[in-house]
Length: 127
Image (cartoon, rainbow, N blue to C red; front, side, top):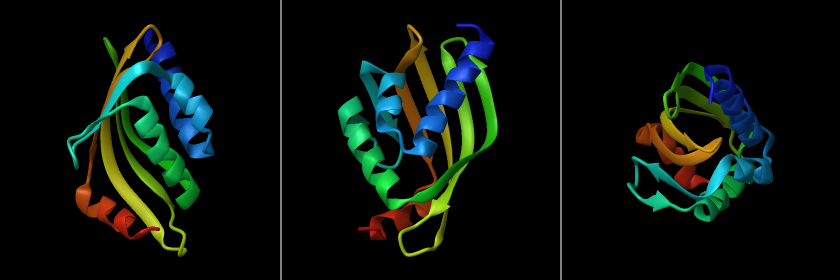
């Protein structure tokens, strides 16, 4: 993929999460993609990840990714961002993260996300 195509894909992927469009997110993943997070070091399947994302989308309103850095790579892209939103109790939420996303055949084959576990800890309080 050309650099501009990779960056346009990144916009579509992040936009789908911001809109809460689980099916659009699913379409961005290869069926056998793996998703890994540094805080639990568990490799998720697409379905496991979408289940977590659906919960997250229901619980956090006004989701917005403030992109700090995004670069196309030879096999995908790197994105550093701050995820911002509102928790169900009205509190503001903010979490720093960095994702290394590998792509194959125009979709995500692997996503490694490094999150600030201290900032993410507040999510454990959300029911």
